[in-house]
Length: 469
Picture 1 (spheres, one colour):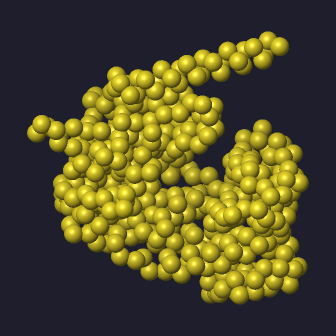
Picture 2: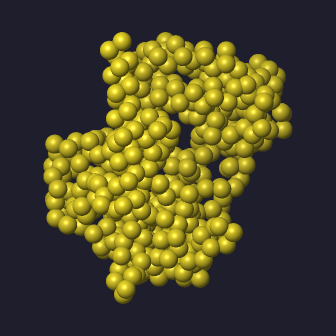
Picture 3: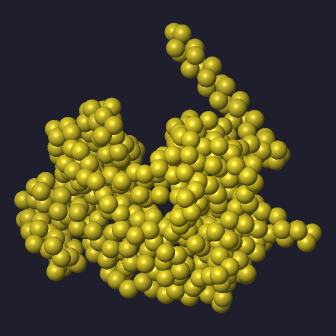
């Protein structure tokens, strides 16, 4: 374990192994309403609804949720009642998020950024928001087992009208992806397994985003100073990919350093995979090239939200001096303050805290990799390591130091490696998940890049022929 005065990332591995009080109870209540949503809220199981209502007894939501539960069991629930259930569900998940975040703060010894002011968003296009809530209410009544193409297609016109409006795009994007996922799973009656937690997450979040003024916007400031990247998290889907750079920002005015993120997201054809993803991402953010070269960046007036997200603009960033992510992790990561999470984003799945660990031993049992740190085990999630990198499960298992994201899933904390350090011929060698972000001379990476270039060229030629027709 790394002492605090030496920049340690995870300070108390024993705290991460202990259960967090109240989390299991909160998630059990969430499971109750998720079971009800699976069968539909037209006439759900009375025991599930009663369990859910009891979970918020003594809170400001108690009366409204009790009424909503009774109305749902009686088959008389309206949009107002569904909204109350969605709000209570998100509140329970938010409380679980806060408890887990507090445990991470205790384990890492890292300070928070303090309280954040949130500005209520504008509420244009009230008719479209009402239409979105109406469709989501129909979904709730039907339940996931009852979905069919006719029900899902009812969202198409609403989403098409919402997408062009920047103020509605966040809600529209969520509804668009949700509807596409449901459509691909129709009919619901034939599903072997229902992703109840995920679909209920999307439904409840959609209900609140469709409320006038429910979404809040963090106060946005500017960042001038030095940006020290520590790792890149790649999130890939069939038609989209995102690279999120986690970094330490050191303000030029000498104030406290803070944890920040910078993201680039692009649509992609499903034929572009592996290292070819970087070709799509590089033009959108010069930070990727700087990371590949092992450099810091100098920012001037870069917009940054209270949640620590840089609204990236290449015009406001210049490559700086060489910066080794492992040096940053050892020296600067612990002292950086963490940003607050926006109210609607408080969810256990959103937890992703950059940490640094070393001096551990690694073992693999039944294909599950575990780091033992100060006699306490921390599971390692190698499934999240992107294919578009030289980082492998074998390299992680052979490592002696790791930069990663501390996450929580399925009842326990685990580590998602972003980079590892191993020893070869008595020299420290670093392997990064984002090593190919700026280009690569690596044989495997170069081969994958060429294949992606050829695939993109073919797609452009086909698109050109179609346009000429």
